[in-house]
Image (cartoon, rainbow, N blue to C red; front, side):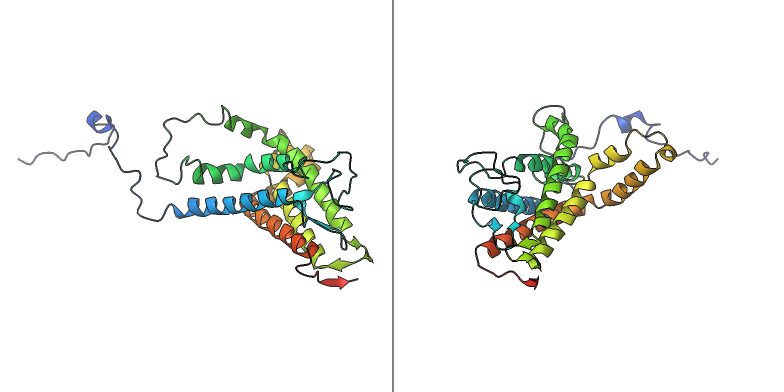
Length: 276
């Protein structure tokens, strides 16, 4: 006599099947080059940090007096150490020693804004902190405390760094506008295009910030009762989906803008003029 058909067992039907997890000693079973993205991220961030650090302390080639080009790495310049014409807001601060950057008031806030940015957190957590370095790859840390202790608890100050970055973006915009009036009067050159493109992209990165999205639309219970804020929130949300791209693009444009001003101000190249 044939035995009745057996019902397939699920893991929950067999307690022995759920007693322990699989013992895998390998760091990962992935066979692809999972380490390439973290490596490229590390190299990209390191290249910008090294370049920006060196340029911030050089104190040369940051202002072109003829065309009034000022690099963002030295804005605002508020010290008596600034070369003539580069201090667009006066010099309320005396001479600074060489170990202090001339833009010491803005650089710490910009650094804080970038370091606490939601995208950059993901970037350096994976590539430098290895938390984790990639999907299905074990991290080397024995425990996880999140952003509840020093130094990572500082990440919670991101919204305040956003306010500072917003003000600095306004200052960079003012610098770009002043650059349209050089020693020869109102004019327009390639340097103006470089400064203007950099400012536009900096605004795109700043306004696409998650904190900006919360400022414009957070805590609203009825969009219909706040049509202006709702419209602003929708525009910011459109930028927000490109926040990662803007984060990388602005690193490149900042370095290229500084490099262009450096080369023009030291007479290595001549600024291409379209008008005057």
